[in-house]
Image (cartoon, rainbow, N blue to C red):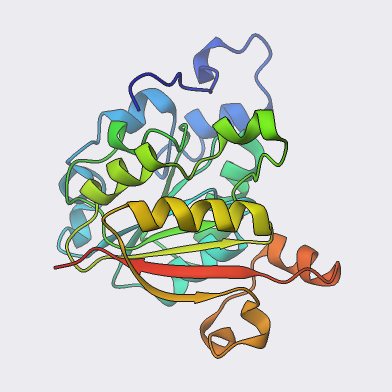
Length: 231
């Protein structure tokens, strides 16, 4: 993964910062971390950031979007800590603001390239990981930009505790098949899979995300798989 380049502009290098850029560094700074501050917490999220609940598991949502699932998850799991990764300023602020409005004091969010989780977390620091509807990069020349690849999964696997879970959802069948091949080559152990989540036995345990609602209205089936770190 070290050969890849981080695809994110510096927060402090923007000539005309918007409200959302400024909010990241001021109003929401106690709960939202720019790329510079994010990496300083590697290996210390429990003690430095979640000091009041340092023994609680730390879960990760990669790509929070506007934060509907992010806020819901944090609110419904008060005994777990949640960190979101989002690189776009507006949805980042929307996510943490929504969580705080829900009364979720266990939520934090970072602005970073999700392809480099090892810049943010130490080995075994993470528990559950959720990856919902990442950019499918559908064109053949774009597939090299897909988040799910062999190197990414090798890295992420090391960051999760033994017994930790991972959930992956997408509406794109080609990306799903691609991802399943990557997972098959990885050290993860598959625990469930469905190519039509909303017509499966897993529907009752699913929370419908913002993008998920859009895809369902378009008549697209939702593909979902879950995995576990053995041990």
